[in-house]
Length: 139
Image (cartoon, rainbow, N blue to C red; front, top):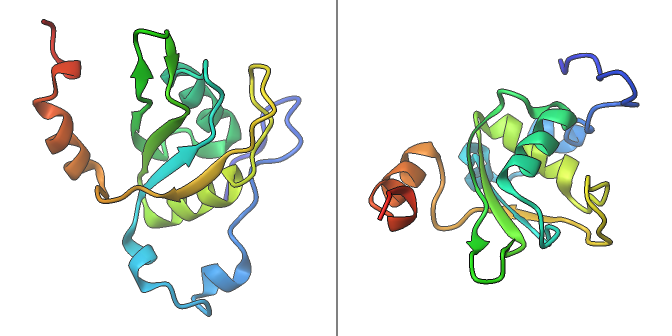
């Protein structure tokens, strides 16, 4: 059960549809997935803004990895991000919440699209991928 909304917030993001939650829609590969790819993010959206957005929409402490690729030469994000949720249920709820999302904290008319992160799924795979990345270490 989601926590009470913050003051000034009307409601948390919706629960997944009853059909998906009850399993009447057979999507076996998705039942274990936890990594989402969020696309069509505002160009100047940062990791900190994404973390704030997740927290403000009821997902505080329900994710364990965020990666927002950044174009350092242009000083802005590439418009997409990967978020690994703590559970498959959290991932499905975040999917529902951020599909067609457009209430950004910065000016933008973009609508978010959500897909599964492929080929990487889960925290362990992301840690392995980025452990030796030059982006993660000082030059």
